[in-house]
Image (cartoon, rainbow, N blue to C red; front, side, top):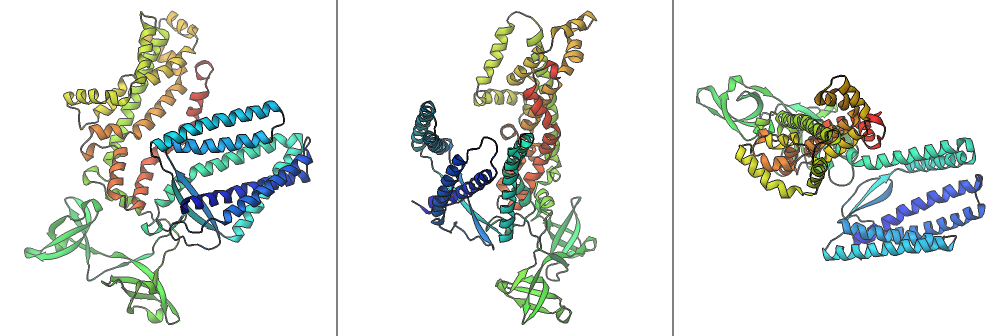
Amino acid sequence: MNQELVFAIGTLSFWITLILLIRLALLGFRWLAPAPGDDRTRLVRGMIIASVGAILFSLIASLSPGQVGRTIEGTGVRIPVVWFYAPFWGWGVVFSVIGIVASLVQWTLGISNEERQTRLWSAGLWLIFGSLSFALFTGYKGTFTVFRGAFYLQPLTIVILIALTLAVLAFVVYTARRSTTRSFGKMVATHLALLAGCVVFGLPFAWLLSSSFKEDKDMGGGIVWIPKVTQTVPYLDPKDRQFQLNFEGTPVVASRIKDLPGGLSQFDVLTPFSLRGRTFEAPLASAVEVPKQVPVVEGKIAATEFRAKVIEEMADGSRRVQILEPPQLKDQIRVFKRDQIEEVRPSGLRVQNYPDSLQYLPPETNFGLRYLYNTLVLVFFSVIGTILSCSIVAYAFSRMKFPGRELLFKVLLATMMLPGAVTLMPQFLIFKQLGWVDTLYPIWVPSFFAGAFNVFLLRQFFLQIPMELEDAAKIDGCSYLRAFWEIMMPQVKPALAVVAIWTFMGTWNNFMGPLIYINSPENMPIAYALQLFNGERSGEPGLLMAFATLTMLPVLMVFFFAQKYFIEGVTLSGLGGR
């Protein structure tokens, strides 16, 4: 048994112990203040089982190794965490084992023979599924990957969490004692569970957002939630002078390489990063010297603490600094080794990651605005084309009678069974003959040819609208087109909103289409640009997280402002969405 598996078993045992202790506390509160219908004997038995289980799992957790594969610094009580990665059939084995164990436990606690037999059948079905999953898992040579980690909690924080947990359990038990407050207690417990789920599922996004404001030095060595920013001060370096001037109409900061005849100088571009390494000639008189930002460090000279700015990085790794404070040492220049001084890094947000990430984009994209423009064009035409084409086709299939309507509708639904790879090559050849390769047309023009799923969805909504509304419109002289536009379309607004939202999200995140048809950077949408940025700047996670956050913001805004339409589109069953 390798160290990763032992650590995983110990970590899971630790968290199971916490769950059993919480259950023990809940049963204890119920025993002290029983609700109507509570059996104290069963409560005592549950407390004994929870206590024994907590002791056994705590012993298993105590045997877990403390090493996680890397050094994680921190003070306080160490809390281990673990996560697994496995293919689908590997998770099938895991859930099968859990299902078998749960079914056997329920079998031992069953009251009637019928209930016990049902639990045995359940265990048998889980065993069959687990055996099939294990055979496929081993056949495809699947492997489990264990990610190990830990974080630290201060004793005061642990005491507060314990007190809060006990208070919540006591409140739940108290509300369960009274019929008037029982429903309120269930509501509170349900909302707490939902809130806990939101916190758990929101952790990846919180980590993304936090990482987008971090420096690269905070990315390794454990989980760091609160970013820190290296304090810097401006410094005019006489050995490495930097100038601000224009290069091909773009303001740049460059260093001077050498002087040329005629009052010219050769410059090397430093920022923006997309032009870094480009050299050009310009009059020195047109350049304005600007200071560069150097880090602030702190240390001790004898017993005196000082702060200084780094004015030169030495070849042997040491640093030449100019002292800023205290006043009696100010402006002194000294040389220290790296382990003798420490950079001043207060808690804060490195917002510079966002403009820096945009500076790495190609110059022809205008700091990413071209990507945004291309994506908005695709989203606009895709949403308009999908709504118009699908609603017209759905209206025809639901309201108009013509020979072969049912057969054509079945053929339309049958197209949903065609994999995208089957039609990929014919579509590419068609667009190539039209000369649309390396343009946006192959991505948004197909949306004006109705898709089967959206047609089916809108057809079901149109069928719910009474025929009397359309008949009354026809009596008033409305044509099919006018009845469709003025009578039917307003009745299916929630469905249209759902189709629009799904189309928007699918188009915004579309990667395969641009990958096939787009070649030049000026025609790329955001999803394709994000993948290219990941390939080029994967070694700078702070910039990558900042750019990923920028690409997600429009989608998040659409979701928060239009989330009610997701629910309405699923739950609607009345007339025309009312």
